[in-house]
Image (tube, rainbow, N blue to C red; front, top):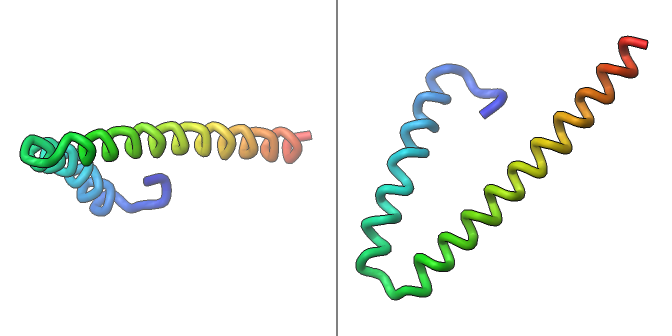
Length: 69
């Protein structure tokens, strides 16, 4: 959400809260493999996002350090 304007951030924030609630209700009536698949997939996405942000910001700091020299 780094490049979004304020209205889009609010909308994405709302979706971020509603989606897990909907998935939780659907998971109550689904076979056990489906919620497990969603949970494991979600954990992988969280890990991938954290690693990507860390690499991006490390690269950004490196470029700023070179620019300031």
